[in-house]
Length: 99
Image 1 (spheres, rainbow, N blue to C red):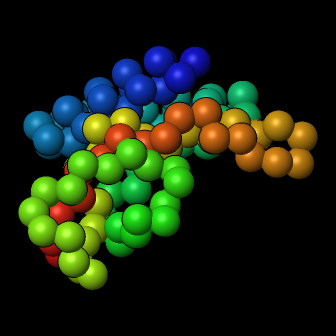
Image 2: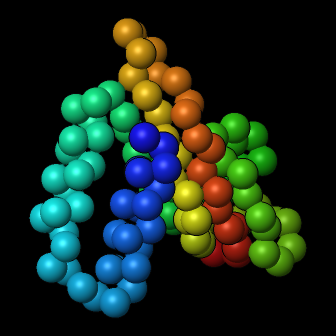
């Protein structure tokens, strides 16, 4: 399922880059189905970066300083609901730069 989620995420990014909003409803429907199966997909784009984050693998572009944020998401963060807990299925793969 992780591979399918990654493909849908990539399609969503490509559609957004092309300003092709015709797929929005279909993509939202797919994400809804993932959630029904217990998956939570998180896009951390724009979030502040911290070296203490354990849910992402980051490549830092530029110098390390206090004003870093996630500037590009190559793979989303994926969690799976198991009983009363959330298990990390996939760390997000991101690029980090100066905000």
